[in-house]
Image 1 (cartoon, rainbow, N blue to C red):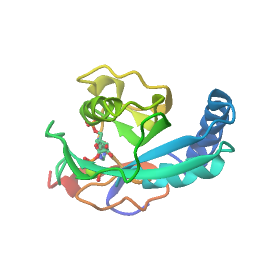
Image 2 (cartoon, rainbow, N blue to C red; image 1 turned 90 degrees about the vertical axis):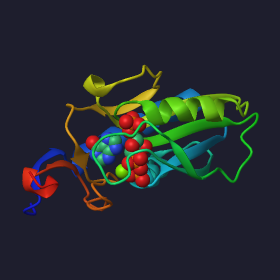
Image 3 (cartoon, rainbow, N blue to C red; image 1 turned 120 degrees about the vertical axis):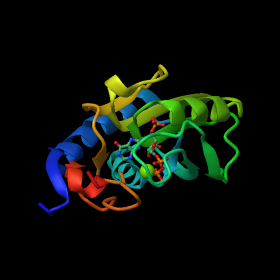
Length: 179
Ligand SMILES: O=P(O)(O)OC[C@H]1O[C@H](OP(=O)(O)OP(=O)(O)O)[C@H](O)[C@@H]1O
Ligand code: HPA
Ligand SMILES: [Mg+2]
């Protein structure tokens, strides 16, 4: 483990196994209908790549970039669209793919925004969720793991844009934050 890391919270093997379970549930729910996976950049890149490959349903993929965290460890609560979808989602089955639900502010905003475009259905799959950090209640269909209210990195998740490429989810040593 690198000197910047304090602990591994979820291993690569645990992520693989859980995504396999979620994919089976998702396939069963959509029962052969086409699903538009909407990945939320940049954090959801790894989940999107691995979940999509575990699904048997016919899928298409699109991406949205929003940012509320900047370089810090606290959500600003202000969501900005950096890149909108390329596709019109009216009448389509949309599954939002996320890495983490922390305060819930990003997804709450996205649900309202995408919901107003009249998709046939709109659901969420998030690898991680921090139940103790929720500032808004969100109806989430599929969650990989509920985790403690600590800042985590890896498997897409960053601190100041770093550590996204770690194949597992872990916590950082205090010195990284300058403590
Ligand atoms: O539930 P919330 O408190 O809103 O936090 C969750 C959001 O924050 C992170 O994105 P971020 O804004 O850091 O952008 P990134 O994916 O490019 O890192 C993460 O990927 C989620 O999209
Ligand atoms: O714990 C986190 N780590 C990295 N990015 C995040 N965005 C929201 N919560 C987190
Ligand atoms: Mg981030």
